[in-house]
Length: 393
Image (cartoon, rainbow, N blue to C red; front, side, top):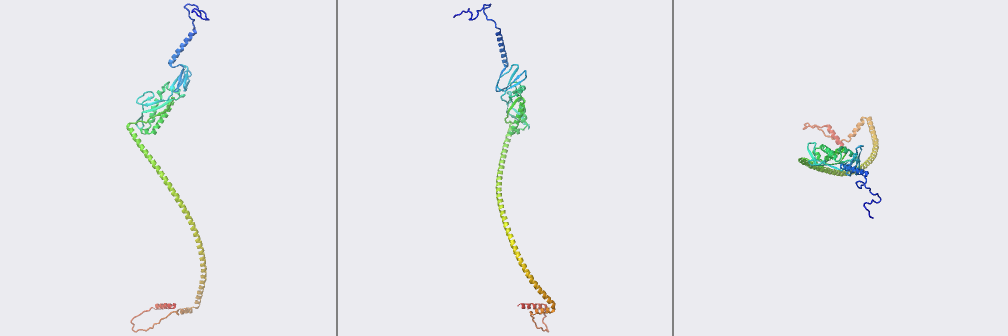
């Protein structure tokens, strides 16, 4: 079926001829929609240019703080994802939550996190430095993030402020408490580093930051001083070797002393056992000798008693005998006393019976040639002796 352009559309009315030709009627609602869409597009372009579209994305490496300017409420956003807010009423500020490195190395500052190397003046007046010192820190992902936003501002403001302000002074204070020789000691060096970490951690926490660690290299000294330190280290190592040798010798001495003590203790125990055995034998011998002595004393006592009884009996007999003899002598003496001179003469006669008399003729010489003297007493004694001898024969 063919149609003409002049025919009206199917089911419609034919166009009416108006002045100016055939045009559709004016629709005001379409105009309003178009203007509104244009305005929305303009606002979105403007907000896009300003970065305030009402929707923002928070990554896992960021922490955000949403602020309501009307109520003053602050919300810390730590979970990654899209966040919706009302432009001009609310705003979302994002900050980098990844670990940051503050480097103190080189002769000049290269960035906010890269400053010149650290020089420290020791308490003895000497200087030493750290060529490559690194401080690692990050944002506290909690309510402290809002405090960090107030103190440091949005974006990377915290990287330009706090660590750079505190690090150099704290490290100089803690390491400057020691002399250069003391700092060369690893124990003192680690103590100063730990003290620095504790102070920096407290300072940074007040501004919403947390200290991860301070990586501190060995201090560098003047070349001559370095040589002196090396010489001292070698001397200390030699002293340490000597101390170890002394310790080894002392241990060896103690071991030998323990061995000798044990050996002497064994000998002492053996000697003590021998002495105890000898003591027991001596005690047994003593008991045996004591018993023998007691038996001997008893036997001698019996013998003495027997001899005593025998002698007593003999003495009694002799007493009786001699008593009788004495009585006889007494009786004869009494008789002699009664008979008087007669008895004496009889006794004298009895004695003279046994005497031999020698008679020598005597002549008187008219002309004596010599003179002799005879002691009558001696002659009488000699004669008496001769007579007794003869009587005995």
